Image (cartoon, rainbow, N blue to C red; front, side, top):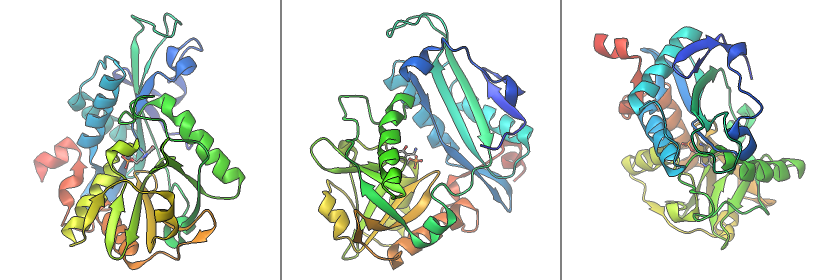
Length: 309
Ligand code: PMP
């Protein structure tokens, strides 16, 4: 992680080195937190944060699902993000809002501990590598199941859930693959350790539906809308692992990974990035970088810029 100048913490901008917590922090012991991953892109009109409102709405929903009382609303979190982007002066960065149960009681069901909220920002390049973005990655179906809907609410982007992702991606990379694909407890395709999955077969695009314990990805929603606008049929349905092996094209998408083709799953060759994947990847990258007007409604600019425009 490249250090930047400031971190927004509990309502103020503090120096990077001062954004610390006590070792008795509840969230550190039990994963009692929620977070977001957001990208800000350098566009011709200045820095744009991609779908900032939806990310902060999901942040609020994640907190609600964990019964966390967030001291800041969506609008305050949005404006804090802009303050931070301005303070760090980076035209392009990754933003990481986080809220967690703070220091106080250490019983699991702690009541009355403060909920701490922070936003970090730093430059983060391609998540699965330039080579992966261009030529596709090798993925492995994990022996770890995705957490079930009645284990932890999968609709919440909760910090504790990422132990599940960490085990899966660790297993995959130790075995020489670049990313893991997790299945549900009954064997349906869920998502990657930090991405949603898309399958292209006979010209139709399919992706697991919400009942497959997936995180409702904002990039997933973006890709579904772009694909439909481009005339593709997109179906949200249950997929099994052989759908991955026999796909014409496969890709994963997420804020960090953007649109990353998958060229192999469990040593089954799917192939180099295909035409549908490449078209969607191009449309997505053109949109986030402000090079395409067609879906420009998703780019949010600093409040003063919006007024001036
Ligand atoms: N699934 C999981 C498990 C994730 O962690 C992420 C990243 N937040 C995604 C999917 C993709 O979500 P988004 O497009 O909103 O970044």
